[in-house]
Image (tube, rainbow, N blue to C red; front, side, top):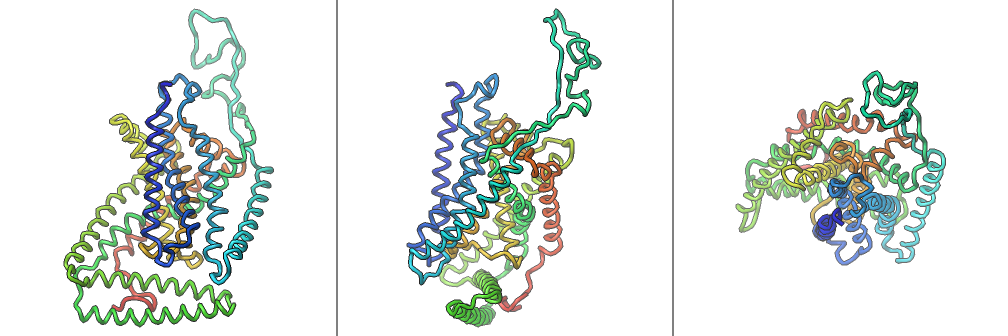
Length: 509
C-alpha cells in the first residue's frame, strides 16, 4: 500500500469541487437577465460541460503526478494502487463526445425553439434533430471503425541465439549478439529490411476519442494558432489604444445623441426582422440580415462601453476613471506575461516538435527542474501551460468569430450572455480540449512519459490507420506555428492603430 497516493485523491476531489463552484459563479454572473429563473436544463449542461473541459485539462498534470507515485516501483505493473488514469481518460472523453455531438445540440435546439410552442413540442422538435444527428454519427463511426479502425505499429524484428551463461561477456560493435550465427539483435545496426508492421484493432472508445481529436485538432490549429498571439498582444495593444483623458461634457452629449439614433435604427431593424420571422419568411436574406444586426448591436455595445469609460459620471467619477486607468495597466502587465508564455510555447514547438531530432527538451527540462525544487511545482507549471493553451483557443475563436462571415457570433458578455451563446462556446471549448490534451502530451512527451495519456494520444492515435500521416508530418503543429506567426505580423503592423469607423454603428470621429 506504500504506492497508494491518498494525497492525490484528496487533491483531485478538492479541485473538482472548486471547478464546479467556479463554473456556477461564471454562469450566475455572465447570464442574461432574460434567462434568470428559467432555462434550467441549458444551465445544467453549461456547468457540467465547463467542468468536464476544465477537469480534462487538469487531468494531464494529475496523470503525471499519478505516475510519480510509482517511481519507486521496479516496473509499472507492480504499481496498481494509484488512480486508474486510462479508464478515467476514456470515460471523460466519451462524456466529452456525447456532450458535444448530442446533449449540447439538443439543449441549443430546445432553447432556440419557438417560444410560442408548448414544452412537449419543443422537446419533440429538439429530439428529432438530435436523433437524426445520432443516426448519422453512429453510421459514420461504425463504417469507419469497421474499415480502418486499426493501428499499424512499426517495429523491428530482432533475434539472437541462446548460450550457456558465460564467465564473462564478450560483446562489441562488430559482435552484438550471442553466438556466431547471422542474427539481427541490435536496433542500431540492423538493416531496414528488419522493419515490420504490427497491426491490431483498436478499441471503439479509443477510436471515438481519436476521431473527436481530429475534428478538434483542425479547430485547435486555427483558433489556437491565432489565439496564442492575439491573447497577449490584444491586451498590450488595448493599453496602447486606451483613452488618454476624459472628454468634455459637450463631446459626451454629441456622442450620446449619435449613439441614441443608432440604437433606434438597430431596434427598428430588429423589429422588422421579428415581423418577417412571424410571417414565416425566413430565407437566406433574412438570416444574412440577422447576422448584420447582431454585428451592429455588438459594435453599438462596445461604443457605449467606450463612451462610459471616456466620461465617467456620478459622485465617484474620479474613482471610476482611476479604476479604468488601473484596468488598462493590468492589461499591460498580463499582456507582457502572456507574451512571454506565448513565445515560450512557439519556441518549444519549433525546437522540440518540428526539428528532428529535437534541439532541446526546453520546457520539459524546466518542469523537471521545478519538480526537483518542490514536488508539485513542475506539475503546477505544466498545468499552467496546458490551461494557457486552452485560453488561447478561446481568444482565437472570439477574434475570428467576430471577423468571419460564416461563423455565428456568440459573444460572452458579463451579465448579458444568452444560453445559446453559452452552449455554443462550451461546445467549442469541449471539442478543442481533447486536442489541447493531445497537443500537450506530444509537446511535453519527455516530461509526461509513461503516462496513460501518452499511451492513448501518443502511441494509439499516431499509429491509427488513415490518420497517422497527419501526425507523422506534423501537419497540425506547422499550421499552428504558421498562423501564430501571421497573427504576430498582423498585430505588429496594424494592432497599434486605433480602430477607425467601418460601419454605420461606430462612434463618430
